[in-house]
Length: 486
Image (cartoon, rainbow, N blue to C red):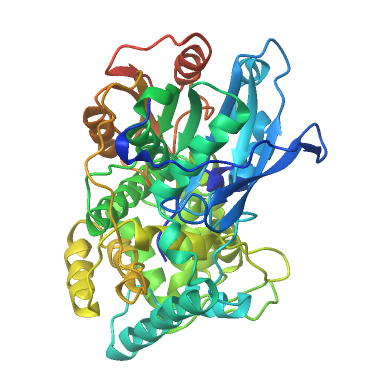
């Protein structure tokens, strides 16, 4: 199961256009209605195919929290994924943006096409998703490879059967064009935007398509658009290995650390043994839902708290229990990552994530090629590399050919702020450095920290720089580095 490039996982744990830009037109106005807790909701009509602006239309779900003070305009927010709900993210506005920013901007979130309330991609039933996610993502026998191939084909076939008309039109460039129509409908001359994780890719593509319409973009926890899908997979897997080592070093200072002796190598061996044992004999599941806590669910449960260093105490507890054979807490952590809800239902996050990834990139057309990539990745990322690589297998069978984004540089755009956390597991720091360099007006801010993304995670330095940029258009010096907390 691919590890998400999304800041929504953290919320769950806490909680002038270029010629190629198209000529799509939005429906004339947003009809706002009250939807509780100070928020207003609306729908934006956009073309299914931006190349046919007068053709079939779909509806984009939008929510806003009006500014509490002297208003500058709107700020659009996106948590990443792909597949994360911008509506749900904006509903957490009080933890997504500082009070100072909320005072000056209407906070606006939208579900990108194919996600949540915006013509969602559907592929599998909830029980089928349970089975798919539970497949061994690092197969070490012919039978496990066959099971993963069959499950991945079922996933791709289900998407074609239930969402075939939508699949060619859920790429990041489509969502960026929707975002420009939303900006226009909101009455903003230029876009102000906070994108985290995959949301940085959406923001960068927007800037490349519409450089003259950029006011201020904060891209936090960036994706490197120059990398191929498998290069992204390999780098992400390596990032989680680094994050695990940081967790273990911290663990050794805690009384409840389940790895006595203070050796990262020894602790890694125990975790590797735990995953092997879960592959042979699933851990117990105290939730009562009947799922087998095998290697796949165990790996996802291990990964989830690595997104946020504040969740490391939970990971210590979960690993201690798992080493005694109880996988309940790890399973609950995994459910947060895949957005499995009480009662066993899912949002469409997993399906949308796959649909966008598959259309945004070129993937191997045989499982044999992917198997080799998985073996190669195990050299630098022995715990996570194979499962991250194999997670792309449905794209091998995808019914729509991918159309990857070409070079992104956004010539002529206003300064764009790229923020990177040095030990970010999901979007490695090198990606933020690369994106800032590729953007003609990119400005890099680094943070000496752990966890996924930096803004409003405890660094007063990062928060001040972001707020001043968004509100005052005060651009930090390229290469600014914020120190470690504490």
